[in-house]
Image (tube, rainbow over all chains, first blue to last red; front, top):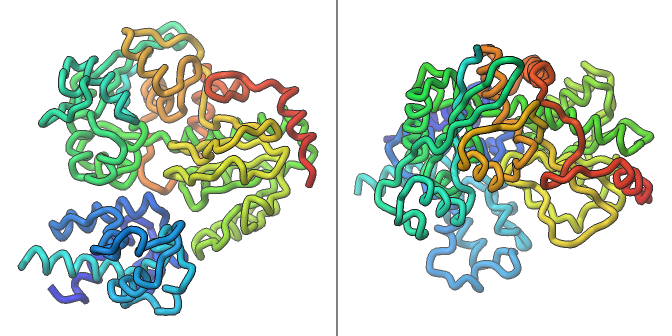
Length: 132
Length: 352
């Protein structure tokens, strides 16, 4: 399934969950700052995407994936992400401008970086894993 | 004769699930083990006298904890459908959702599409009750300025509460370090509509209002130690927004979504246990009362699911609550009434 098809379905999920218009949902839209989503909305969006694509999206998936096999102490120190963690996040989230994955970023701030494209990429990855 | 209601709940922690195991004669559950295929089922029937007729309802409980519901919403929804069927078999003509059950699946939207029985999330009456509680706090504490700070927006309950307060002529301080564009737009429109001041502040430490209402959707984890001195804090969120990390005598915490019923709830011992475990020994949570009001009045059009809450529904439910004798008759914390004197002393401690 190509990314433009995935994007359309992801966009539909955001429209359904947030009550925004189609044309307000762009790949680069930040889901909290631009679209006004909150954590409860993420629940609905995740449910709709899981249902639409027959996949399972793990909670805190990106954070967990970015930890990889890093030792917890190498991932964050008092809640602040290490350089190693930021590097891993830059790989996992190419849609986020690198300057936003800045030193001093808290682990709890990762969701604030999410774009609509983040979800497109997650869905794409999970579909490919399922097919493999 | 009133129609019947159902209310679907779930255990909040391991201890409550063990109690559920005892109730449902599930030995494994009662010993703290997750039995294969734990069941959702009715656990108690309730009566409350409204006027000359008793209002009857039933409680059904999912066997899942909050984290389990959030981690696997599809499983949660399957259990909710069983809960709905159990309430329907009892004769419920409206079914309310408690706790995380009201959060998953688009805050009840997806569940509501699977049944013809009206489903309601409780959010409208929660917002209206928080509004009445805030007004009472303003008058009881002798606050000179009619100004309230709100944290937790853009939550649906927080947003509706802002609308209710602004329409009452109360100035608002919205605590939000980087308000999203839709929230800015909504508050600008509200400010124009009501001609009442609405400002955004960066953090709790910047608030001038003597009353802070915390109304996030999923528990914002605000340490009590960060609240400026002399504030009355009304916590509407479930799970609670305020984390009591320290003892304060210069800040008063109020529970924001409780109503006093017109008469005692009666029923078997399990409805009593449910209410004790969920801190409802006398007062009841608004989300629990909402399906009661809808059943009693048969005003099924007042059911609400999803994030878009309606001002008129909230007001109508508030009117029904008053009509049937469910009142905000005081300010409470964990079931204990807070005195006006304590509120006034707290307000006097405000130094800015």
